[in-house]
Structure formats: C-alpha cells, structure tokens
Amino acid sequence: MKLLLVGYGKMGRLVEEMAPEHGCEVAGRVDVGEGDWTAQADVAVDFSTAEALRQNFPKYVERRLPVVIGTTGWSADAPRLREAAERAGIGVVASANFSIGVNLFQMIVAEAARLMQRQDQYGAWIHEAHHATKKDAPSGTALLLRDVMTAASYSRPIDLSSTRAGAIPGIHTVGFDSPSDTIELTHTARDRRGFAAGALVAARWVAGRRGWFTMTDVLTNA
View 1 (cartoon, rainbow, N blue to C red):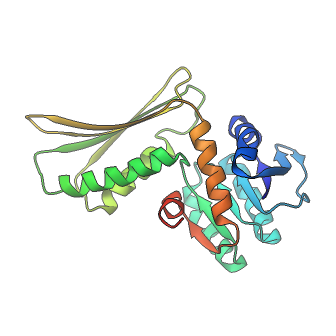
View 2 (cartoon, one colour; view 1 turned 45 degrees about the vertical axis):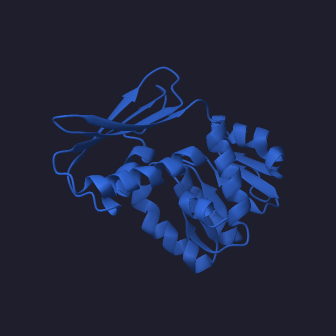
C-alpha cells in the first residue's frame, strides 16, 4: 500500500519509519510550502495542523483519496468536511488519538461512566499531561474521553484539567471521587510509536471503504 504523508513533523517521520512493518511504503510527502500532491498513493495520512487540514481536505476530495486524520483542533469544521467526504464517496478515519491502547481505554472509560451514573456520591474528572510544545489544551483525547462518558449517559459535571511540561508523550487519567474513596483509570504513553502504529493500521483498514469512521470502528470491525 502506498501512502501520501501530509505533515512531516515528528509523527510524519515516525509513520514513515514504521511503514514497512505494516506493509506500506511512502509514495510522497507534503509539508509546509512544499511537497508533491501528484504522487500516486492509496491513502493519505495527515498529521499536519488544523489550519493546514482545512486547506488540504479539498485536495483529498478532488483526488478521491482516502485519508487518515491525526490532526487535532478542527472539530468545528468536522460537519463541513464530513459532508464533503460523503459527497465525494471517500473513506476517512479521524481520531484525536490513534493509539490502540488509548482507544481500548476509551471503551473501558465508557463502561465505568455507565456504572457511575447510578452513583450520585461520585464526582468525575479528567486530567491530561503532555509535552511542553503541545499547543491545544485540553487535548483532543481528553475531550473525546469526556464525550465518551456523556454518550454513556454520565450526566453530571466532568472537570477537565491539563499539564504541559517537559517531554511527556501523553498521560490521561479519568477519576471518580466520593467521600469514602477514589477510583482512577489511567493510560500512559511511553512514546509515540503506538500512535504511528495505530495510524498505519487505520490506513490499511480504510482503503476501499467509504464513509466517516473513528479508530473505534477500525478496532471493532477488523
């Protein structure tokens, strides 16, 4: 499978490094102000920026090119982009976090939220920590965890907080606290390889599919 890498930062380079392990090769790269959009590819993998994605997406539509989107900070644009993808009949896998472990963690959190909804004595919070250069706070994954909890019928307030320091790859904690005890669920990323591996799994999965998907779809409909 041939990939077009869009955004050639740390994640783009890691996807390129790991591509052969997943039966993929990089056919072309696009980065700020440079790159070859004419490269023949089966799927694009976009780890650019929210602003760049707004400019890139019409190119995916024009080329009928399936795309895996790991960029965050563009949720307000999602309805418009989704409509364009549906008109073009292309497959899109969009996720704030492509780590397989994080996505399984979301399923665990959803079940915990469903159980805790019946226990009024517990309050809930989400805390996330990332490296100092990460721009968005709270992280897209933290927001996704909040949405997963509310979708599981958890209707009480959920406090969100963030830390930006050092070189932390990513730590997400979901907690429930009562007068008598505390329950914490935590996912800790050791490095970025898990994110890149998940993006490559998603790229192979979305080839030949039409529709707008999440990483949960990839993992539960293999």
